[in-house]
Length: 182
Image 1 (cartoon, rainbow, N blue to C red):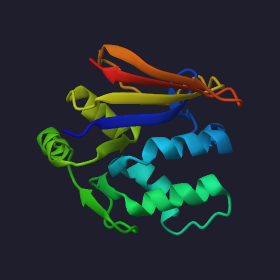
Image 2: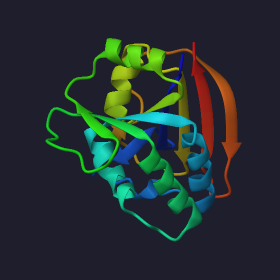
Image 3: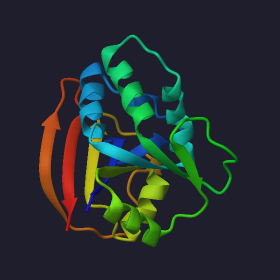
Image 4: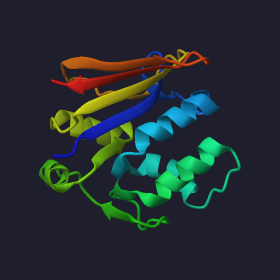
């Protein structure tokens, strides 16, 4: 059975975007971007919420000369993508489909049938998966900034015991923490 892995770049106080919706403080350095690429490389299918999909779909046509950016674009284009949205009318990337509702049983079946791990991105859709007990690993890249509020990476009202599997510190102050859910 494949694993469902939730990865997010967050502020030190746990937000993916600040109270004004900005996430510019989370732009990864070249070193962090290359690391994220390696995390994404074994993922065959990505499950996204609408907002994150709309941010990431630029990778469908982006041809950035920076090696890490170019590598991520290649990974994006090669992966299957499922966007959970009630409002999105159509997608603008290949290998992408829309699902109107998050169905835990359908995601569980997807995990059971998958040959490669699945990634889940976007805190709202990840919260649904966390509440349903579907997430096998959580990876957080903690940025050296406190934003004081905004869009939290992890949901309130959910308790999940974790085991630390990996950690890494980057030159720009970002710290990566990877946990297995218990």
